[in-house]
Length: 439
Image 1 (cartoon, rainbow, N blue to C red):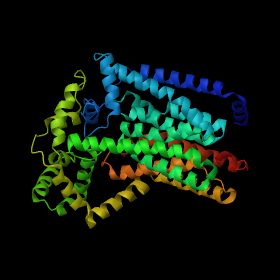
Image 2: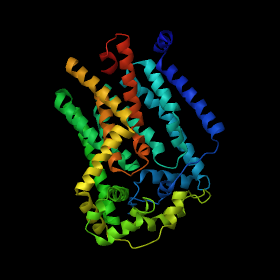
Image 3: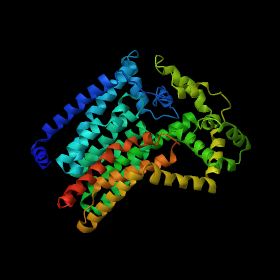
Image 4: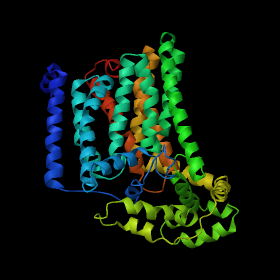
């Protein structure tokens, strides 16, 4: 093992990266060419991303942010007959190319070529990541988006320059437009910039450019929300959050305290079926829109079970958004809902993702200990941990199932934390200085 480690250390980055890319490319040819030829994955949510959007023409969808629909629209323009094949090919290419920035980000964070090679190979070969390449949803691009964010972060940390700071502030806006769950990233960047501003006085003139970038991101997000209010009646990034909340107040029983007898009666009736029935019954606007989504979806792809559910759901009354929101808020501000959401924290932290939180706790103890001893901040690792915890916050607020899907934007960050923790363990066993592989 030491011999292999020494061999890897001696190799130039371009040789190691070329070898990694070759291995990943061959495996992908095998995986998609022989194990799963012609695979296309999609669900009811995929249909919604085929919505026609034109933010400059005032055509805004209240349920899906516009970046992925614009990607689909571009490939419709290129060739509507080969839309799905071209879209998947694009996703495959973006996923493959993202291995390059992941490698260089890992070089900066992990500080050990052996660990970098293992982490990058894991990123490039992990089936959980690969399978998203043939899924018709924005998660396929989230891996590349998160990896680019990591790359921008480490580039700034290596060379704090005005342009790097500006990129660091602006890029989160594009990720939010890809998937609203990235909204927490704006807050993480603000915290990052503020702490650098307080602790590193010599860097302040550069950090102002980061604040300018984050200001552009915040204005961009608020402007999009305002457009949603103007054209769809609600100041939101995505109204999917409303459906998730309706599911939560139903499951918790807090809806009984919502103060709207008609809605309570509807939920009493609808909750006997699937948990989708309640959001669709109260927020029936989505049912009307779904009929338009499906018209743009490739007709040669057979409908899935959840797609048929959405298409066949009764078209009932479209209740005013103000009335729905009032009912939801009344239900949320109750002891029943508070206890339910508290239990969700326990179920997520201790139950579903207990092993991950143990990893985060141990790594946090390590970097705090190193700060106490050496007075140095592990900036990149703190950034990763904060973003991951922020995504868990969104999981806590999000729907009742498919939690792993909500965690997808954090996978590149989690790999970095896990890789760093492993290098710490190896250094500890070898009685080497841990600070050299963390700071």
